[in-house]
Length: 396
Image 1 (cartoon, rainbow, N blue to C red):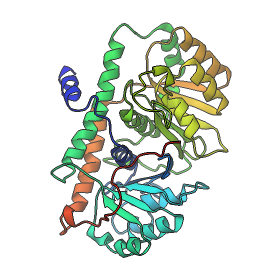
Image 2 (image 1 turned 30 degrees about the vertical axis):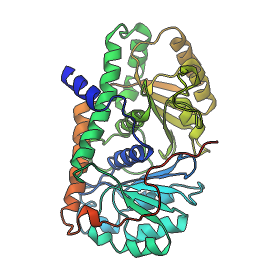
Image 3 (image 1 turned 90 degrees about the vertical axis):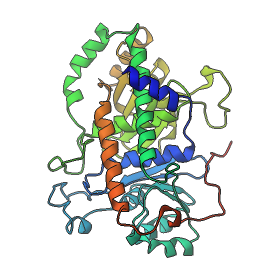
Image 4 (image 1 turned 60 degrees about the vertical axis):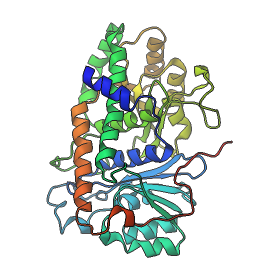
């Protein structure tokens, strides 16, 4: 553990991800939920002014089609699978995607390009490329859609990207693990909660999509593992304390908001006043982009008293959290408020770093294998000039 801590502090700590890097990482992590053992693809669509997430998607089957190994075999899956970009467009619901920006881990095919253009997406960043999808290039050019490959490091391979993402996740976990070592130790309130919720800690969320058998090589097979992983990755953009939170629709399991702690939009990051910052959970509640159902929240941290009241008011029916493992003072009051509101509060174990590293590595290897069939070098992949590569939210 000491070796990891030293390495992470030297390479990652204090170096904040840009907005493009942040959404690149999140789109990649969204892809890890795909059951395709050959190629996992993820997509995130964001609003152009605020950079708020509008929709997400990964390649998977429609409702009613089981995730069996047979259905995912080559020659069968192409007739069944819905691509990540199409899913992001379809699952956006009533969200206005006009002028929006998409981050995808694979250059879109022609059919996905049509849907993205029709829905109003006007800027596309992509991480990987397959030459058979080059046919989309003419469509994007005709529709005046800006397209650019995402930066992956000086060697233009995915190795540096993989290493940096793994280091960021390690940094957050190690930082909070070290904070837990002293003086906080599991207390009676926490241990009682853990015992009462043991069945929910082990169980997974019920999905409207049939799961079928567990797929070989898909490591984040449980929804709870997947959403906690996304919350953890979201926290890497925070300047300090590194909190991450995600809200999902309890009926559809669609992501409704994904956020981290920091200063509200328009407030300079150098204010130096922690009281001005908004927590990851509060941010997620404010940024949610779907209504109608109750929500399930996943958070790296247990909510403070004010957050607990807001969660109850925002129709959050269940909360999964990782840290801390001691609930005292106002934390006990917060727990009481949430439970009085009928909310299920579920303490979860710290994510397994080895498992997360393996999942990231396996997903990267699938992208690399897809790229190995290309003849075009990275420098000749489809790209546009005339627009800034980096993004910044517009100030209010």
